[in-house]
Image 1 (cartoon, rainbow, N blue to C red):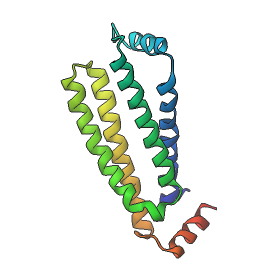
Image 2 (image 1 turned 135 degrees about the vertical axis):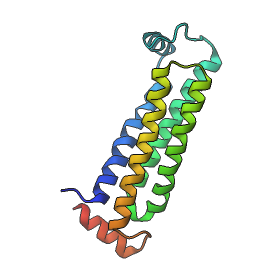
Image 3 (image 1 turned 180 degrees about the vertical axis):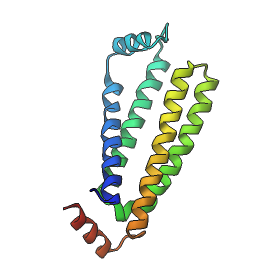
Image 4 (image 1 turned 60 degrees about the horizontal axis):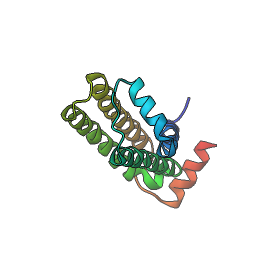
Length: 153
């Protein structure tokens, strides 16, 4: 059975690794962006420099967040406090996504899918972080990190 620290580490690595895929969207051809948007029912896709700028920069941001999650997963005792704040931030982000998506007139399936999944991911991260915290040490010391590394095998 995996330890709570190990579960938290794998969750951070999974979400971080998937988020890295957003870097590819930042450089994908505009034609592909238009075709995917149309397949999702967003027709017509605005063929504008601002639209592509926003889409590419959002992709870069998601990729950057993925990179940070992978860094956080590399040393849980050291980053434990930050992981807790990341969970709270993710939950707030999910709530704000629901609001912004609804204000933007996006389809209900998009609004619910994006906002609820982000909120659920934040709740899961918080739960995993709290479980790991209750089984481990809340702050970084050399001994804490050595014990953590030994537990990972």
